[in-house]
Image 1 (cartoon, rainbow, N blue to C red):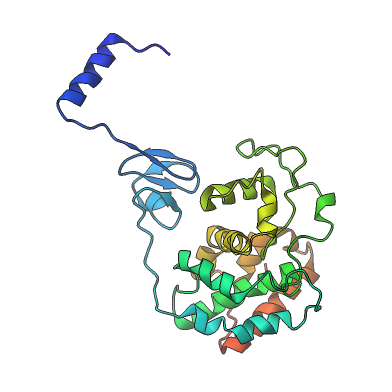
Image 2 (cartoon, rainbow, N blue to C red):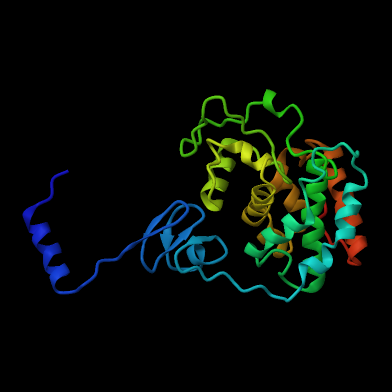
Length: 273
């Protein structure tokens, strides 16, 4: 690359005069100048579309949690044990999925289960664990059954190229799938999702982090805005919607309404997608 002498002289004057050029801010997909926010879609700006709930870097201005709900007081050990109660004693998830790991991870997700009213918080927690229960078979499975035989490589997502001999099948509490989800989760959470997708099934902390990451990226804000449980089904597995797999959709809804009853709240409207 060639640089004109006049440009070099101009930069030198700025440096000697003490005028600082904007410094880039590294973030998930942006390299924004200082003072600009990076949106989850990879663009820089300053208004709410960039600095609000979809902000992923820079001076984000996400709204503070709306209540002081104590999530561990809702997600009790008894509640956790109740999910495990329907799983076989030899399930690989036993000893891997723990309440302690979940509680340690949610420290980094202050908005989870703390948006809206106390009832809203309980509904969100019920919704999250309804999907987890369905996806993992009551915390039984760490990996998708026969996942290695399925192709979860989307070559159109060139930002996250699939690596040889790596499988991006479902792993973890919400069964993280596809190369682009592993790549994006890895960028956000600090692990090599494309070269080491296996870590989601070997490290309980990373496993729960990917589940909370996916939930907050794709389901939390829609649910908090009142779109209902059905919107979360569409976010997690839209193939079940619009008659695609009514049995699976009903399974998720049944877990959700059951957990809402346990928490003493109404399930709300728009249960199906």
